[in-house]
Image 1 (cartoon, one colour):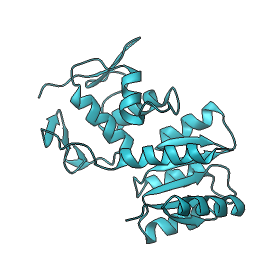
Image 2: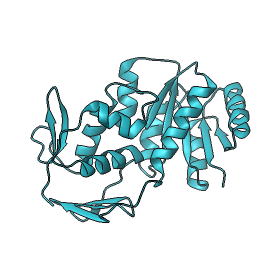
Image 3: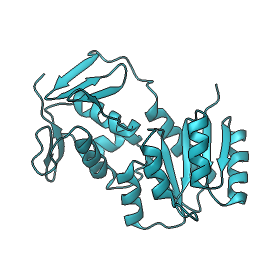
Length: 230
């Protein structure tokens, strides 16, 4: 079945070009000229990934991202003509899965889409342990769900993969480079601080105090370590 991609961008010409490109690559593309239309499309139909422009009239891409994350954990790649580091930090902290500055090459956007879709799907080997519990956190590796004190915690694909990787290497220091390779592959590093931001988001979602983390410890100059006794 073809993967469905929704392009949310007010640039009609770019939307047309992206839809044509996506169709040629075997995807089923759709488009929306603004955030409101994009959100309606996501609530009406099932999509596998969103390409979301940052600079749009009305609600900008960041506000649209906030609204989408209230009801969906669909993978989202931000598109922007601005390459400021602060913009990338905001997008990643709000739950974006990747960030591509305009103008971009077709090969780059295709590679990043493939990587994000690969991370969001459960294509790996079945885990030896189906369920893992630590503290008030219960992780179901088969269902790819996380409960915190009995309540469902909505992790993005990247956040869950990070937690899975830390669990696989629990009580062992892992470097930012190892995390980057596990999550993004060695083809590219989308953003040097993306790992730190992702760790921060994950801590928040499992109620791990960032000032005095009980589980995900930062070892300055080395990396991170998930300290749990199972």
